[in-house]
Image (cartoon, rainbow over all chains, first blue to last red; front, side, top):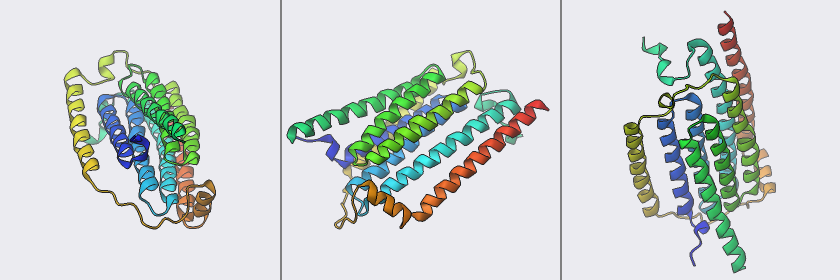
Length: 106
Length: 175
């Protein structure tokens, strides 16, 4: 009997699916918060990749875990910064549509 | 032993299902609050996957940081933030663009999956250390001390930066 959880490829395919889910959500949502939520999926796919390679291939099993923890910290910092940026953009432009925020184009 | 393995496998499939059901709701939700709920459910499923990858510590951190902190930050961002546009057309893509986005993602999935399955992965011959929390903590304070310090500095900078940016927005709104 083949156990799915014992194969590296299963985890890699899950990570690919999460990455593309994030990309699709990023394209589909037209609000800043929707795009932030989708970017979390991309980061989650990256950390699953690190953990999978850590479990099956890496010589030192602490490296992947520390990298995944690092990605979690980056994601938390990114979420805090993006939420405050969204508030600032709303106060300045009075809109939540990313297509309306185009000061640098002029 | 075999029965335990089968139960673990069933749980693995369950966690995958939870991850992608939550992901589907997060991406396809009509209201942004539902999307946050979907994100939380999906991240819980990913915590289960970390458990299967042999790291209970990371699974706990996933629940604590992602489900606990990041989802709450996003929920607060929605609550104190601007009102979303009333009509759905302004919030999500049109039908034709959605089809194109779906097709592009399917193509990417096909290409990446073929690459992943065809590649030959060579495991390391010599393994140093183990997956215990003790070993993780020791290497975090010895070998990887710099990354440990770096992440704390990044978090501190992000908190101060977020406060300053939010304050700038408030001052501009008042003036």
